[in-house]
Structures are given as structure tokens and as C-alpha cells.
Image (cartoon, rainbow, N blue to C red; front, side, top):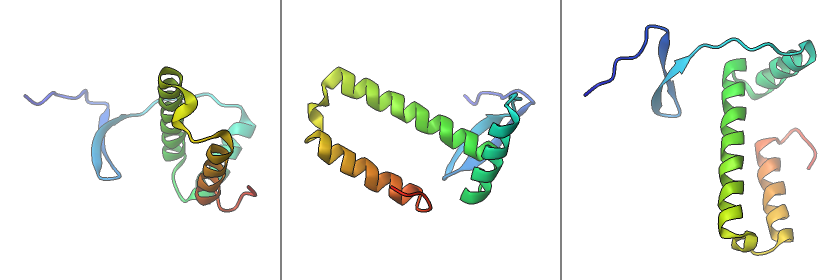
Length: 99
């Protein structure tokens, strides 16, 4: 049974998955809005996409922390190994920054 979406939902295609997107208003300090615009331009995405990606990254971070808290940090070989992995990941995702 297909669920009917409200009229204010817009179907969006993102990374091969279709989902319903809803427009929201957010009040931000001027300097954060300027930073968001600059970062979105640097990444070649819209401001809305940037906010969505940042929120998704935060959700994943919380899920990871919850998993590690539940199962223990010993799933990571050692702290130094984890930090090297994180540094490589961040360097790959943000090549313009110094890591």
C-alpha cells in the first residue's frame, strides 16, 4: 500500500535513493550562513545539500559512538591506528585542508 505524502513534500533523488524532502526555515547567525555558502561552493553543492550532509554525518557519528559504547572500544586495533585512519579519511574528504 503506497502512502500518500503531504502536498508540501517534494520527492528528491539523492545518491540513487528516492526520498521525500521537506523545506524548513532555519535562522542562522550571519557568519554561519556566510560559512555555509562558502563551504557549499567549495564542495560544489547547494546549501541545503550541505546541511543535509552535515546532519547525516552527525547521525552516523552518534550511531558509531553508540555502537562503540555498547560493544567497547576494543573493536579498534589501538588508538594510534584509529587516529591514522581518521586522519587519512579526513584528508581524502577535505583535500584543501591541512591534516
